[in-house]
Image (tube, one colour):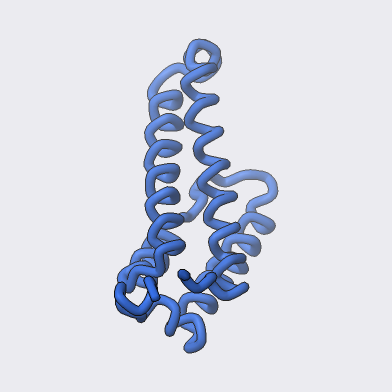
Length: 130
């Protein structure tokens, strides 16, 4: 019987799941509303929304699978992907976006680098299946 992931990793899995679902909705909405987006935002915006939604949805699905399986390279991949997840669009509430992004990034880094959780990612495949 496979061991369940610790609660901290479960919370991180939920966070990655939320972001993945958000970008899946963004992808499908850009496809479904592509005509309206082209009418009100001519140019590359509909294509950009679809491409970035697909990219983050696929990377999130990959991270979810690797986190659930507890693969050793998941820690490095999670740190890389979470550091690349930056909202570059300046909005009226950019300070809130910045603080929330920093908090969530700090949470992910803390969970990944915590020694107790590091053990979960460092186990070999034969140890996970017992």
